[in-house]
Amino acid sequence: MDGNELEEEREVAWLAMPEKAPVLGQSGEEIGRMEELLGDKEDDIFHGIVLKLARGGHKVEVAADRIPKITTRRIYTDLTADELEHLPPIK
Image 1: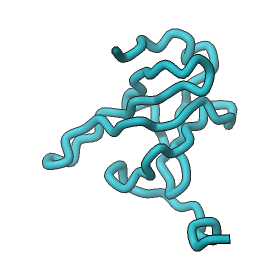
Image 2: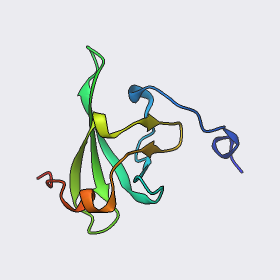
Image 3: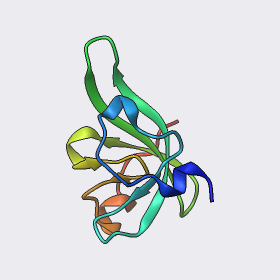
Image 4: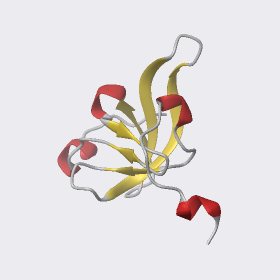
C-alpha cells in the first residue's frame, strides 16, 4: 500500500483536482475519467472538465454547475446515464 491509499478522501478546490481522476455519475458508478480542467486559473473561475467517457471513449464537456463535489480521489457529478448520452462531444 502506498501513502495515497491511506489518505482520507476529502473535498478539495477545483485547482487541486487529481489528474485523470475517476468521474462518477449521479448513481455513483464511474462514467469516465477527467482529461482536462476548464477554467481560468488566474481569476480562479472554474468552468468544468473534459470527461473521457468510459463507454465509447469520446470526450465531452461537463459544466462546473454539474459537479457538486471534487475530492482528493474522484469527481462527483449529478449527471444521469441518459444525460450523458446527450452531452455534445468535444473535437
